Amino acid sequence: MKVLVVGANGQIGKQLVDLLNESSEHEVRAMLREPEQTPEFEDKGVETTIASLEGTVEDIASAAKGCDAIVFAAGSGGHTGLDKTLLVDLDGAVKTVEAAEQVGIGRFIMVSALQAHKRENWSEVIKPYYVAKHYADRALLQSSLNYTIIRPGGLLNEPGTGKVQIAENLKTGTIPRVDVAKTILACLNEESAFKKSFDLISGDMDIAEAIRSI
Amino acid sequence: MKVLVVGANGQIGKQLVDLLNESSEHEVRAMLREPEQTPEFEDKGVETTIASLEGTVEDIASAAKGCDAIVFAAGSGGHTGLDKTLLVDLDGAVKTVEAAEQVGIGRFIMVSALQAHKRENWSEVIKPYYVAKHYADRALLQSSLNYTIIRPGGLLNEPGTGKVQIAENLKTGTIPRVDVAKTILACLNEESAFKKSFDLISGDMDIAEAIRSI
Image: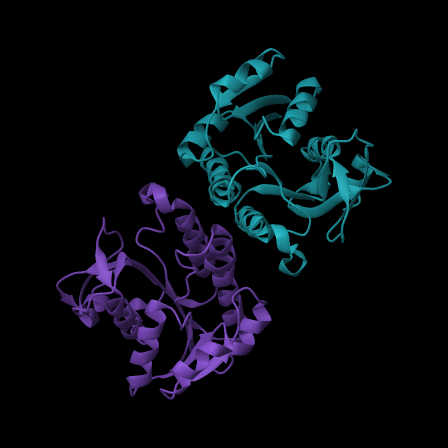
C-alpha cells in the first residue's frame, strides 16, 4: 500500500513516516505544509508533497493522487488558537475525507482522541478541541470510505512498549506516540480494523493481537 | 404550531418571539439560558423554559417537549471566544437537532449565514465561525427532520422593509434582523420551504412570495 501521511511533520506523523519507510509492505508519501520541511524527509528517501489543510479539497486531492490509503495524523497543536482547531482539526480533516472520496482512495485512518464520540466524557478544559475532533470523526463515519478511527489517550513521548489496550470505551489512560504510530501501521491491512472506531491506551496485549480482538 | 425559539434572548430571537406571540396561528416558548432573563418575556405573556446549549441533549429535549417546531436562532455572538463558537454555534446546534429527533419534533428551522454551504466564499476574517455554522447545517441536513436552513447576509438593526431576495446562492448583501425573523415566521408552515436551504438578503419581493418562488 502507498500511504499518504497527512500531518507528516507532527509528532505521531514523523514516527509513522519512519515506520512506513522501513516497512517492506508499504510505501509512504509525506504531506507537508511548508517546502522548508521537505529536506528532513527527502534525506531519508521519503517522497514528499506540499499541501495545506487550509487550502481546497482539490489541493489535498492532488497531493493524495496515486496513494491507496490516507492517515490523518495532523493536529493544530496546543500552541495555536481555536481558529486553527476549527480550520485544521475540523475542516481540514473533513476536506481530507472529501479529497479521498474525490480521487477514489478507499482506506482512511483517522487519529482522533479518547472518548471523542461521547460528549459526556469530554474534559472541561479541552472541550472545544473535542467538539472539532467529534465532528471530523462523524464526517468520516458518514463517508463512503473504509475507515478506522483510532482514539488514543494522553500522548507521551516515552519509548514504546508495543503493548496496548483497545476497546470501544476506555475510561482514561496514556500511550507513547510511537505505539500509536505502530497501531496505525498494524491497522492498515487488518480487516478486523475496517469500519471500526476504538479507544487506545497502553496495556498488556501485543498490538496485532489487540486489533484482531476488536 | 407551538414553536420553541432557541436563542430567544438574542437579537433575531427576541423579534421572532414577539412575532410568534402576536400571531394568531402560532404559540411560542422561549428557551433562555438564565432565569434572570425570564421576566422580560413573561411580562409579555410568553412561556419560557431554561436550558443551556452547553448542557446535555436531554436538557434541551426536556425544554422542547410539547412543541411542534424548533427555531435555532442562537449564536455565541462576537463578544465571546471561539471556544463558544465550537460549544454553542456548532455543538449546541447539533445537540438541538438531536433533541428534536429524540422527542419527535419534526420541523426545524436553522438560522445560518450567507454562503455557509460554500467554503470558497467564506470571508477570511470570520472563517472559523463559518466552519462551525457549516457543520451544524450539515448535521441538520443529514438528520431525519423537516428542515429549512436560512442563510442571511450581514445583519442590520434597521427597520424592516418586508422585501427580500432568496436564492440558493447570493453573492453578498445585508438584511434587517426583523426581516429575518419575518422570513422564519413565514417559512414555518410553508411547504415550499420544507427541506430547503437558501441565502437571504434584502430585495424587492414580498417575503411570502419570495419563499414560494424557491
